[in-house]
Length: 214
Image 1 (cartoon, helix red, strand yellow):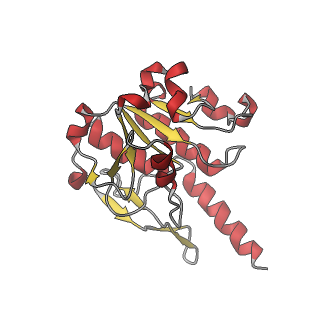
Image 2 (cartoon, helix red, strand yellow):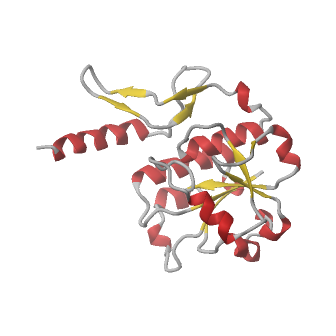
């Protein structure tokens, strides 16, 4: 299965986005992940060097043009792309691996509060994208990718994936942050799966927010 992220965040890429993309590369493999719809004037220097070194594939092309440079990521006209959509009529299931070749996600998910970015894509490509749900709660972008990967590539049904909702991340007795998303639990540690370095970034962001109050 191929995975496409519709990048809808400003450039240069933030640390948060960089860590999520890095985790997605680790999960699905560099050959199976493509970041598209970057601004037309995007240059190599706008992409985090760490991601380039990991083999991140990226393009300024839109979904309906991707087949020109990335034929392995199929053509939207083939109707073999599913769009992760909280308003989808059905849940993503293991059998969908036989129906679709590409799963679209990314900037579409993970905003809090949620923004209706999926509607923008559906309106732009009427009849060509079928929405599929991943439950009723918002996930971070890398979690949504991991969840889809578990279902489609590992053939683990959605109801057998262990989640934790809105986990509280503690940095000390008096320091804690509640994450407004659903995460997958690590079977070994029993903790939410986060990108490497995310806890450190969250702590830094938390400290900056507190400093802003004074």
